[in-house]
Image (cartoon, rainbow, N blue to C red; front, side):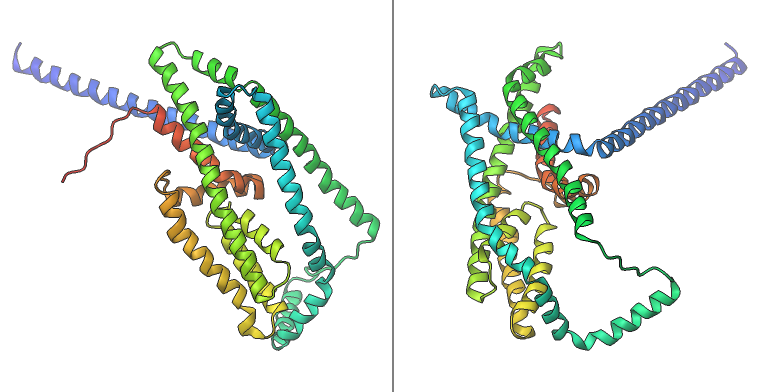
Amino acid sequence: MNPAEREAAREQAGADAVSRGERDLLRRLADASLIGLFAFALIAALSYSKAIALPLAAGALIGLILGPTADRMRDYGVPPFVTYSAVLLLLGGVLTAVISAVAPAISDWIARAPELARTLQEKFSFLQQPLERLLQIGAQQTPGAVVVQEKDSAKMLAGALAMATPAFTQLIVFVFSLVFFLAGRVEFRNRLAMRFHEREDRLAVLRAFSGIETSLLRYFAVVTTINAILGLLTGLAMWALGMGGPLAWGFVAFVLNFLPLVGPVILKATLLVAGLVVMPGVAWGVAPALVYALLALVESNYVTPRIVGSRFTINPFLVFLSVMFWSWLWGFFGALLAMPLVVVATTAIDELRPHIKPRLPG
């Protein structure tokens, strides 16, 4: 082969390599586009089907938490449906008792709302003129923006029924999804594993399913215990400060602490406003929020990292993104499911991906 032919062959090989590289790039771009379109369609479907998807997801998560308990009780000869029924009745009884104890305090706060509003207005009367001036400026710039409409009792009742009906429907969907998931949990796990042909893949799916159940149960038990202690201490602190309704404040602290990062901020702001209304003077008014902030600071920076961190290693930024995303998609109850969904995703990835951990130098 003469030099000219060799040069032509090299140019042809280079052109073929460039062509292959362009085809690979286009293929990757096409795959990324398909994944992006699928993700967009999935998010839109989850948002559009919130009324059904939210209770279904909640029922599946609760079913994954209750599954290991039934397996352990089965070893002692207790049928699974007996275990499920006992646990659900226990949870329902505890929830009913707590709501019955908290409801009078909440009703009292609602009944005193006009009085509390007048008290707050008196304490911050020095801000009345600047706020009125700002409202006048805003009304001049956007005429008709501030419109107050009176609603009669019939319209308010209709609005309340309109809100209660979807909530009742979602509760029914949640209960049935939980019952049917628990009834077919083992069969669902086995069928999911049998979708794969290789034995190693089937074992990986079974390990992932078992790992998800164990992780969710441990997370729920540990976090519920920590939140219950925080709620108890918050209620005692509010009782000592004379805030009124210590059971209500403790219950709210218990529930909101299931919202990582966001829940404590909401309660601090609520306690600040309530303290300024109820307590005499500004100094005593900020005391409830400061006491709760101290309790939440110790819990979030010392107790939870030492207890939960030894069992779960999750990036805080990932937790924040999950809370923001599911809050945007499904509202308050979506935020409650954010952390369990992160636990499910991280556990599944850890169990299914190859266990190849890079070794750092030194």
